[in-house]
Image 1 (tube, rainbow, N blue to C red):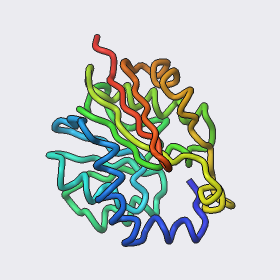
Image 2 (cartoon, rainbow, N blue to C red):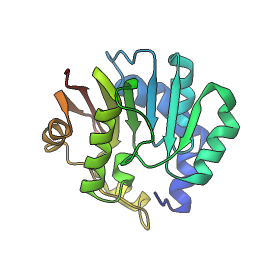
Image 3 (cartoon, one colour):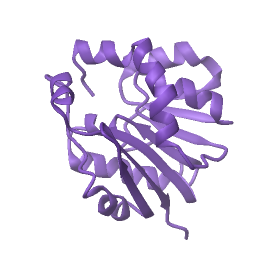
Length: 190
């Protein structure tokens, strides 16, 4: 979804990529077994994808923005299957992935209804018992300033467990840090 120039520069910076690798992903994925076939939704400039590509046997990245998808293909070549598409209507078969992950991107989905559609699709493409794991940002003054002229639909951590359950997940967990929330849940077993 649209990002202003400052936001694009930050998310494509070496500083952000370093923070993702050292702090965000270790915290967001602590204790999560991703399995053998992982889908990343909304990788943007690829900071999270760089880390995941080294840590997973098979990685597919679903990116809605054509320019970002092209950049990811150029960077990752054959090591990551980059697919251009909408998280609310994923072009994958039911039950394909062992894990679905998304990091700091849900707030760029333009409405809670579209976020819920993405969560339902994540449940659909997961194997029974597969894990959804991710993180998003919490509201602060800096966060709001960074999103001037951006899409910003903040995810409420208080309602996220209920939303995950409604999307087809069990055992939803939401944890908070100063600037972020992390979540995980499992697809219902048949």
